[in-house]
Length: 323
Ligand SMILES: [Mn+2]
Image (cartoon, rainbow, N blue to C red; front, side):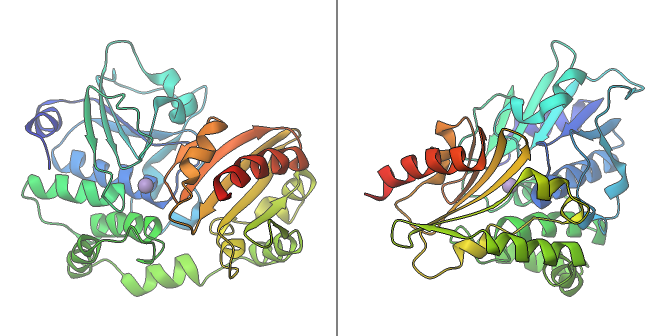
């Protein structure tokens, strides 16, 4: 349900900073672009800023280039009065974008993460929404606007990414209803599927080979780990690959219940993506132990130490849940 309070701040407010989490995924990017589309229709002043450069994978989205990557020298030519976040469970996830926020601004929080801390002045949280873009779709609808191809593709991209192509158990009948409307509005369904899931760079495919070689099975095949060490991530080939979706390969193994994809992004610092196929194992809770978060079946965190250290710590926690 769209609250009157939410509609009011979007209708009457101005000078918005729109943002999402660091390393934005398809739902984050689709979410901020569809909010931008709405604000533009309402002739609002706004800027979209995220920490980190968005993946080129999403360059087919019309206003992709309007997403600004945070830098120390970034100048915004208006005073921000409102912050609008999409797909952000807590403000820390904005990372350096926090430096742009003046004191006393209003915060609007649009999200579907279980771990959301309700940090906004206005919180639009819907744990049943398949994607944040589905929530923005409802918001745009509440303004009685009709969709064009551009916004239909922003929304559809979030929906496809966050439902794993309408595959996750979280995929609702509503997701298909919304997808039908987006297709009607001109979203290129076939092109997006081909581009997102059946087009790879050579480096990505070679990287997948390296990753699969690292496969490490634990607890009689119930837990699968894969990893990249820092040397590979920094190498000529490794630095060019797109690792999106890689965690699904270990997860696809029959009898695997929990999969973890570890990347030593810096020496002594490991980024972890966690996935669960077991309804009784909530990987959001496991990620939370290490200061991360996400969803019951898909979450992430960062662990200090080597790949071996991180595996050991994760194994300890996952083992507790599995026994
Ligand atoms: Mn999302």
